[in-house]
Length: 158
Image 1 (spheres, one colour):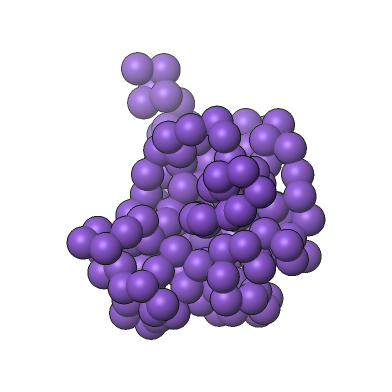
Image 2 (cartoon, rainbow, N blue to C red):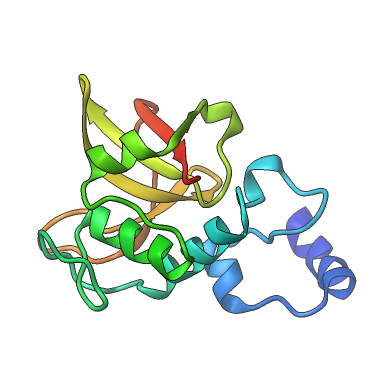
């Protein structure tokens, strides 16, 4: 209830907020003084997050790198390429290329890596509030999902 009563005041202070920006961070607004994890890591990370959100509903296809179908690392590679940053093709190679950060320092736009032992098997783009944009598996689509385990690693694109 408190968040609903603060929204008109917040919008009057910040001006118009695009629906895409709100959707890209899972319904939270990127505003000064907000929760630290709500702020994006960098301008390219903000853009990559928006690109990933704009692909909501795109079907999963193993090995696909867009623009209409994606696998997990294909989505992250596509989003960051549109933001002016190059990433390697696979989730493991993307993990190897990023600056590793602790969960306590994660920001919207950082990459979320799922691993088993030493091998990374899935990647998404952190959206804030414990959620990420990703292309999960065959039969699914690009979507915003809650991160379902604490056993993840985070990486910041340089």
